Image 1: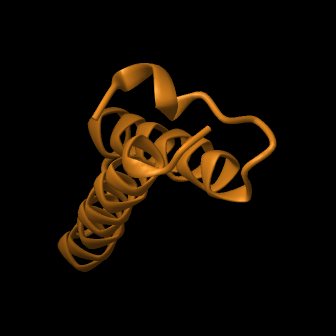
Image 2: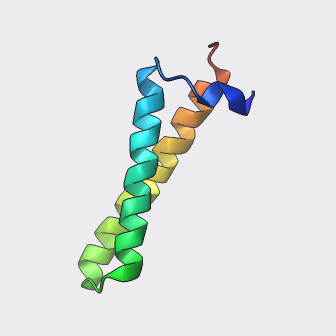
Length: 67
């Protein structure tokens, strides 16, 4: 597996990977800068963790795929 295989702009999985990473960054920024009730914090943290898990799985698929 090579990290250079992550960059595959013609593969839709690459754009999903970019979207999930961007969404996780926005969610973590909001959690650090805003004061939300605990229920909303837990939901947003769950989304961020889910995005991380899906992002890792997509990254592994992209690195295993042939370019």
